[in-house]
Length: 399
Ligand SMILES: [Zn+2]
Image (tube, rainbow, N blue to C red; front, side, top):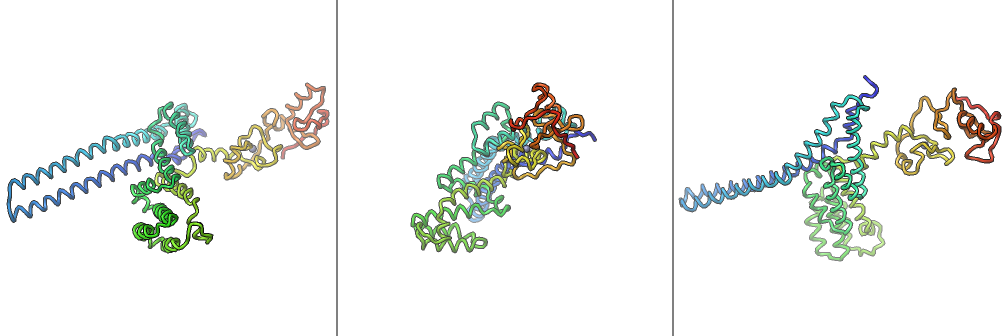
């Protein structure tokens, strides 16, 4: 096995949501078609039953022909509707699925991670991850620009995130309507995940009625929308009932918390988690997840030490990537290599590390060059006071 053999399984680990999002979309089209078929065929079946009943008691040829025409019209209407749905939503979603699976399949044939085909493939992947990052961070315009420039419309989920933004904007305006519609569209899937976002949204609408002191409406609302959750949310429903006795200005802990407007921000987060979960999208940008692996191999305790201990060439030592690497483990170096801060070259027996009196260490090559320019004297770039003859430097031995 060659060292550069492509780890196809490792590559695929990141790609579940890539295949899953269009699959979820297609499932929705399929369910909607199924519902239409059930509704129309059920109606036709009833018409057939009526006709047979009437036909045996009081036969009327004209009425029978009329009823049959009605049935034909219904079935034709259904056929039109289904083909419209397939054309407007089904086929485009299938095309997205096909293109994504083909994109993944090309990796299977690439032997080595240094092959130019893999570099090209990984470039597309990086573009996808950049779009994902932009979409998650509210930079939709940039996301659309990258998508159009690179021609990767079918490989990114711009539409999914437009949907997320539309629903989140509504929640920010304190409207649950859009989020509730989304819940009802995904009812079965949410139930399977034991997700209770719908209850949280209903509870919030109830709280808003209580805040407006619309007691009668609040009670009717609770009966209709909260009580069905009684098996799993009994205590919360009881507490919600008691809320009506407390004004929004109450200082009583649990009721004050129910009236707290920050619950809306929590709802936005809960919605986002639910929609990510449904599409098997990770809660963090894919770009970050991919970078963690690289960051973990570079991260050292010194990256978070005093500024003098940091290395200008180390990405983790920078504020932004250091923040990103906070949660990843430190790298484990069985054989450490020491790199000169001045030249960036490795220090070893051939290029010994040399120490100033203050303990700062640089490579022999770097200091020799400095001494040659300064009549045999060297100065610690971090501490101009620290000036001495090159010959007086201490050799450091690596053990
Ligand atoms: Zn560092």
